[in-house]
Image 1 (cartoon, rainbow, N blue to C red):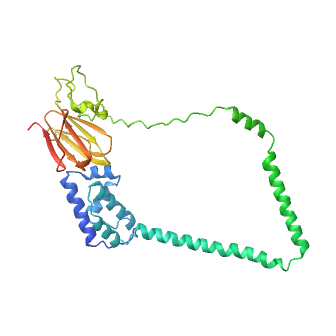
Image 2 (tube, rainbow, N blue to C red; image 1 turned 90 degrees about the vertical axis):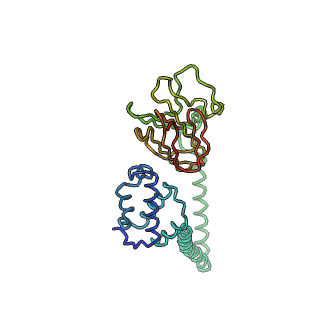
Image 3 (cartoon, rainbow, N blue to C red; image 1 turned 60 degrees about the vertical axis):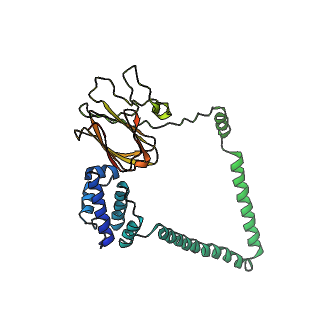
Length: 303
């Protein structure tokens, strides 16, 4: 059963910020759900102010992940939400765990010391013959264990020789292949590392860089209807990227991309570009680098 939680003003303010940021970016709840892996109906309940549909720890985790996806960097507000939901901080959880471990160690200590104390106390009351017999038994057990450890069972020598004669298998570092996304022909494509079909490719300054050698910065041909080519390169950490082409005639699937990923977009006239973290992204339009963005949304190409 979900915890009954009274969510105060900090939670209300955070929810309003989430809704406003999502609408400013023109993101649907489906977009946010795909990005955060949070179910759409959970997001709907959060935006409606219903924050008691799950235990408070889950609700707080969803709120924090939602805020990170929309780049809402307000640690003080999120911390106030944590307090209102009575979610313990990481330090408090660590302290509680250490206290439990100390209690368990203390509980084990008296039992061990009590066992050895009983043996020590009994030494003065046990006859010498009993003590000698116990010592002899310990020696016999140690000798038996040593015999089995060093002699080994039948066939051990053959197994060891066989292992020594077998060559060691080389260690192969297998890298996962990038996942391919099938896109219908009627929809514009996002091609990473696309090749140009023309033989005469103009010399571009960016092509001197290592990452750009196999990237097609120009249209596939002079007759192609898609004469605007946009290259998006994630340079650091990760960033949300969403692209629309030709005044919304084509909408590319948005998503969060990692550092090192290179994305290629095609349009007939222009692009509408929304970047989550502009400092971490480089843009190239038909091979020409776009100056660093001062805001998250920009329109590139023909008017």
